[in-house]
Length: 470
Image 1 (cartoon, rainbow, N blue to C red):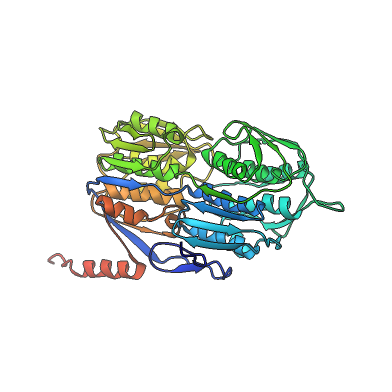
Image 2: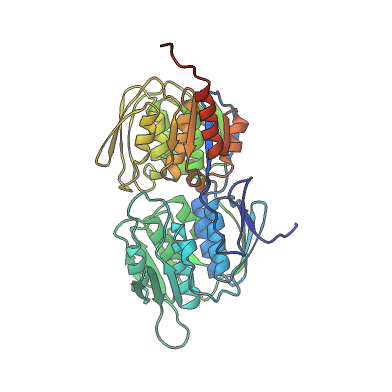
């Protein structure tokens, strides 16, 4: 197999980022996505590897001083940024197709670069492995989508319980293990005030090399947490209870080389299931893990679609008449907050009144105004969105406000009458691999153009409109 220095693409076309240049971040993409709606979709969708699993597992590779090979790694902007962060820490990375080789043998740098961490919340995960390997870590407070407060106090309190000294100065989290000799974290009993995925994953990674036993209670139960635990176990970590609310980690002195495949992305799967429902199209999707989608499938069936398990790793959606339902987002195994926006797009065209209650993030309803611009009838009161179904949406210029909101606008545009133009595509590129190509293969009519081209087309169209007679 040919080996090439890792260059991860933001998209299959346009600019690329080399991990060797940790300061060359892309300018915000000025392109827009034009979608002509009401096209019938049909065919098969190949689901990519889970973004949120891959990001945590890439950080987890810092725990191992030997080669780690990851397969089914999606090509996304967020993966690029995490790779750049690891490279800045002295890690060697190579990519061939969807395979990523990581070698952290020469991990020496304990400070993650601000200009990268500030753009990717998942980058904060490196604080746990850095502390476990080096006994010291300096990581800026993270960035990411502006969907609400996601403090790192649970991470910090857990690391402190394991013996780390932690303080924050000028936006940098400084953590270190004091004492002479080998600076090793100590096992501890940790209770999380809320089942934070990030805190659970950070503390689980830190505990793999700690002395003694660590117990995390009220732990997150998401499939991505289980995937990270399985990755660590494949390297020799001793972890029990991942996928339940209590995880127990017995520390080991070191971890070894591994070859590991990332699970399929359940949020991408859910998004394409909604695409089938909203366009009244029959689609098949694989590879998937149906048990990761129990809440999503149940709500789709409430709304009127049929979801059939064709094979152990393959689902087929059969559309039906859309009807209203109520949704409340909750930690896994409840309905995922990442599917709230896509389902809101679907409910705008469902007969009757629906209520969506967002309990996970307080600022995750920014897409409401954009959907209303397309003719939806949505009112917001606190963390509730009341959706009255309408017969049809109309294409319009809209702006993506975050990653999952951008997916909701794409879904709405696929069902809308006329052309929709979506701006701020950098959100979309963070979380969906080859989305446009996959939709085009199913029969969708869409294209990405530079924003100035869109403006020029609009002016040309306006110039063709004759003035009414005086």
